[in-house]
Image (cartoon, rainbow, N blue to C red; front, side, top):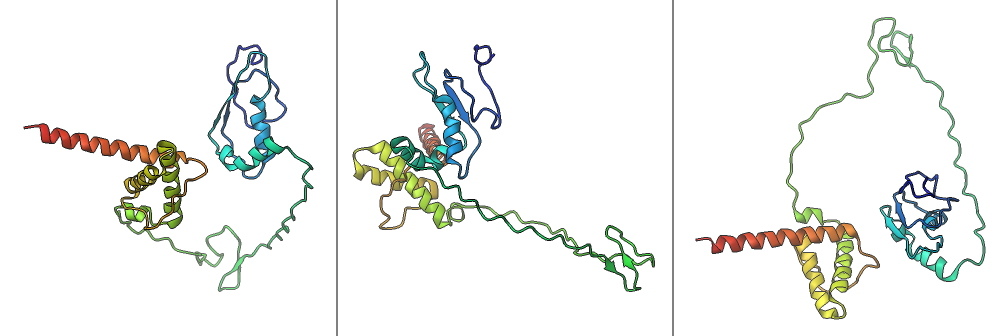
Length: 233
């Protein structure tokens, strides 16, 4: 039915990732992420790369991050191909854990308390390993300074701001530098460190781009509200 066009879409988990050959497929939605398997990623994308007479393109919607994760390896593969196969060295097998013998607790009276029992035959209660206590929590307000305290996250946001500014302001790099600082300040509430180099990221993180767009919309709403308040008598 799918080959005949009666069914427009198929959903599977690994069942169609390899060996499924329908040349006129024009859209793929990748939802499973691969950590190290470049071959599985290429096999998955290959389901939509089959040539067909009336087919001009294939749209790949990647919700798993595999395109970013295997960007360099995939580009090298399609440009240069492969010269030799992977030797396939097997990783060392983890040593099997020895099964610990069953340990029953011995009561002060000398009798053994079987596992799972709460009372000994002498009537003494089995001692607990730990006691749980319920403590009321405290609600603490979060601010921008605490959110961006992680230096790695701040550096990632800065490189993303540089990438977005470079894409929007090309080829004026001076304007891109000023825009990147403004983007960073709109997110973190502070200017980047003095002497921070303009370092665009290799790819645009959609999460950071979404944060920026939301901050821009909030700033636009704030300015519109201020304008209305000034104009209202």
